[in-house]
Image 1: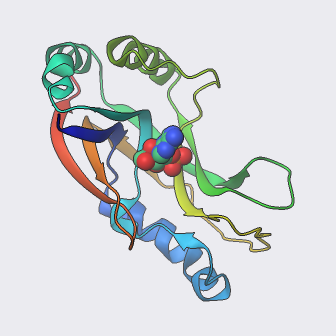
Image 2: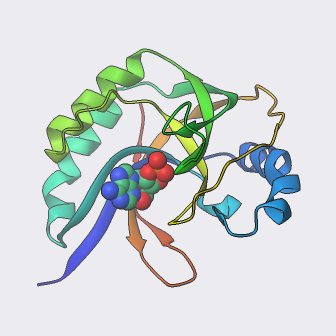
Image 3: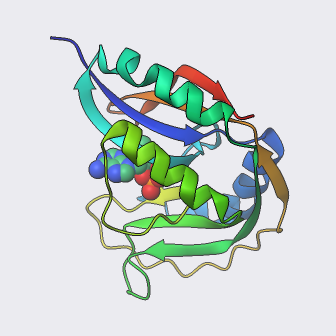
Length: 178
Ligand code: 2AM
């Protein structure tokens, strides 16, 4: 049976991709072994669904459409950066933080119900900028990220195709908010 690796996310405006790319550009050469996310792949993950049969896409279509149309667009602003795990010398994930509407947490709970994917950790929206892979990397940069505001007016169901060069994210469905 055909299986696909899926996730739900917010896409980002070009100005936001550019800001993040600009802020981290000086470190890309300084940390060549880190897997830097290309700006076209930046996104805000809502739910990582993982490998599912292809027909799963249709099974969540109507509930996603209904939830999205009953929600309003979400407002965000960029808010610094940090690492997972926090306060450890070596990072797995380097991210840009976000200020966000509290309603997003209810919306996220709705998405967990629809997808059947429940995460035990509290949802903390972020934009992943780099992953360390198997290496132990200590990030000693000081990127300055301006607190730019933006709005997310739709959610996207992405298919992630894993390739040696890095993942390719293909938008399969888009659901307009409001
Ligand atoms: P992230 O948002 O912290 O970067 C697509 O792979 C997206 O789903 C990534 O952006 C990633 O996290 C998120 N994700 C969550 N759990 C994952 C997992 N087990 N494997 C791959 N990606 C995962």
